[in-house]
Image 1: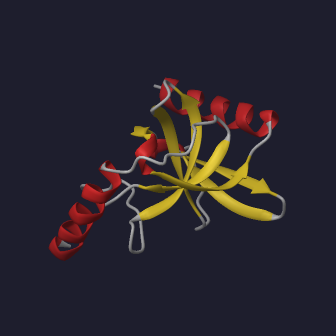
Image 2 (image 1 turned 45 degrees about the horizontal axis):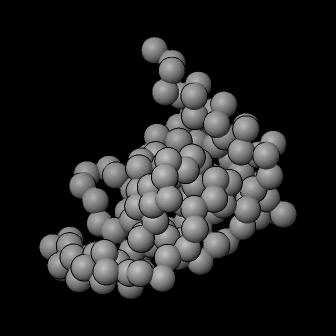
Length: 130
């Protein structure tokens, strides 16, 4: 794990200096450099520590609220099963966080309004439940 932290630190330095950045658009799923995190927080994989993230809400030109995705089948209130053009994934509702667009990379897909609304409702149910 310590080696991964050192590798992530080097990638993070490069990520922080990025200048040719993509725009932020709610409803897009993009590759995102999540890095190495602490405990049970979702991490990225590969050389640049990335994973797919749904841009749920744009806050400014540089900051958004993102929800990471996984391809592993998950059940329960913390996950939202997403089927888009015959591809399956699971939105990790319990792992949402504010991110900077410097972390974003290539767009994977853009979801429709109906799909986004369903995910927002599921997220609100999760965070508002006792």
